[in-house]
Every structure is written in C-alpha cells, then in structure tokens.
Image (cartoon, rainbow, N blue to C red; front, side):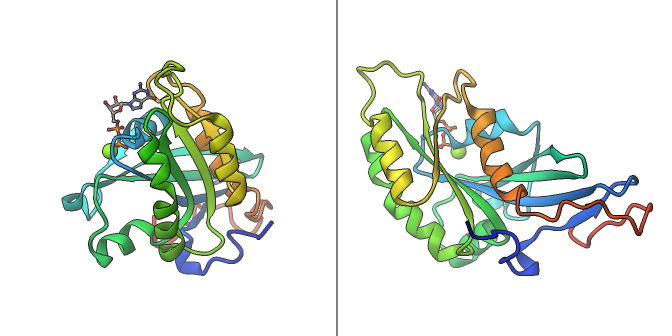
Length: 210
Ligand SMILES: Nc1nc2c(ncn2[C@@H]2O[C@H](COP(=O)(O)OP(=O)(O)O)[C@@H](O)[C@H]2O)c(=O)[nH]1
Ligand SMILES: [Mg+2]
C-alpha cells in the first residue's frame, strides 16, 4: 500500500508535536462526506467529544478532536471535519479538503439515492485531496429494519472493494461500529507515521499549526 503520509507534502500534515516523554503526537485531519441526511453529523459527534468552530463557520464547517494512542510512542490527535455545505465555491472545497489525510464516505443504507451519489462524492474527493488519501466507506443507519433497507451489505462491500476502500456498516443512532469505523480510518494512516520516540528533546515542542 502507498505510504499515505510520506507522500503528502509538509503542508498536508497538520503537524507533529512531542510530549514531555518524547512521544510523538500527530495532529491529522479527517473529513466526512456524503449526501445530506446520511448521518455525518451524528457520526462525528459520537466520535469526538469536543466540537470546535472554525474560520469557515459561515459555510457550516466544524470539527471535533479526539486523541487516540496508536503505540507506546505515538498518538494521533484526529480532527474530524464535518460540513453542511454544498461545496459550490472553490474556496470552500479548498478549506474543507486542504490537509486531509483520511476521508469517511458515508451513505444511508435505507436510501438508495445516497448510495448512487457515492461516485460523485468520490470524484469530489479525488479532485480535491491528495492521491494517497485514506478512505473508508460507511453504510450508516444499519439499525433500520430489513424492509427499510435499500442497499445490501454486499453492494456496499463491492463498491468499497472496487475503489480500494475499507467498508463498515454503522448505526450512529445506536452507536454501533462508529468507534471502529473511525479508529480503522485513523489507524490506517497512523501505521505509516514514524514510530520512534524523539530522544533529542525532553521539552515540549509544538508545531506552528498547534
Ligand atoms: N435510524 C437512524 N437514524 C439516523 C442515524 N444516524 C443519523 N440518523 C438521523 O438521520 C438524520 C440526519 O442525520 P445527520 O447527522 O444530521 O445527517 P447529515 O446531514 O449527514 O449530517 C437525523 O434525523 C438523525 O437523527 C442512524 O444510524 N440510524
Ligand atoms: Mg450534518
């Protein structure tokens, strides 16, 4: 697999800082995309605990952060960005996708049109983010009854496989597999980060992005 983070320019990386014990703490940006109503905001708010505004709040963008430990010497401070915007303007797209290392592409298993929209969302992602960006496909609302289901799990899996993505079905309503989906995406990036402890400084060093 491509070394996602190695291949990204320095500007793509939100930054690395070091804890007092020399552990690396990477701040990385992830975004949620998908049609309106699929559950992006609910998924995001389940995963992060603290919501922050951002300079583009006027177009409905916001992010939350959550720090996950990957190994003895490495943690990831994940920024999960969510938007209600329509990406009509290039500046909005740039602000949203700039620096993104991972994308959660979401559809609603009970609404076929949101699955049909995926190709369009994927094109938007490909056009506006680094070619090595990590992707996970999320079929949300798995709590819906089988009679309400309009997209089978096999269809979701096939789409994900065809486009080289991981796949998971979630229920943001019940909190099913949401943590796993987010962790899977974050960890798929974290495994390509330098793992060694920083031995040259015991001082806390912060990047300019923090
Ligand atoms: N049944 C069910 N409803 C959900 C789920 N996730 C979100 N919803 C509902 O779907 C609607 C849209 O959710 P929202 O997070 O605002 O979608 P967004 O437009 O993609 O951000 C809301 O009424 C949510 O309560 C889910 O997993 N199951
Ligand atoms: Mg929303």
